[in-house]
Amino acid sequence: MTNTSEPVPTGVPRTLRAGLGLWAALGVFLLVRAVISWADLGALRGRLVAASGLLPERAEQLARDLLVANTILAVVLALGYAGLAWLVLRRHSWARIAVSLLAVAHVLLLLLSGSWSASNLIVLVLAALAWACFWRRETSEWLAGDR
Image (cartoon, rainbow, N blue to C red; front, side, top):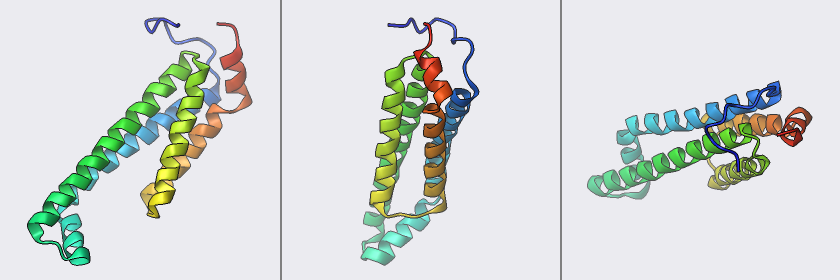
């Protein structure tokens, strides 16, 4: 097992650096999107009242519950992307598979939700680009190189 206090390995390929940046950007985007969604609490409450006929008090609680769940998911995903990307940088090749599986699960969750929005499109593009960078030949060779 690699000591986490070791310096970052040298000779990190550009593709891996780009992938790290993209995973970080995705995590930050998810967190910013979650924070911004709280500013829209009143509109969400109004949509719940209009769409389902809930009482305003019940709609308020449901809107808060949805935003809390959304925020928790955003934090978990952001931490997962950042932590696994960091482990790839430490040359733990299994972490590349794990971050790929996390991204696949995230994308499937978006697709199954049926919500097609600009922000979901940004998530899909960032995840696809980061994944592609992490699976480029240069990254694979670097991960398989001398330790």
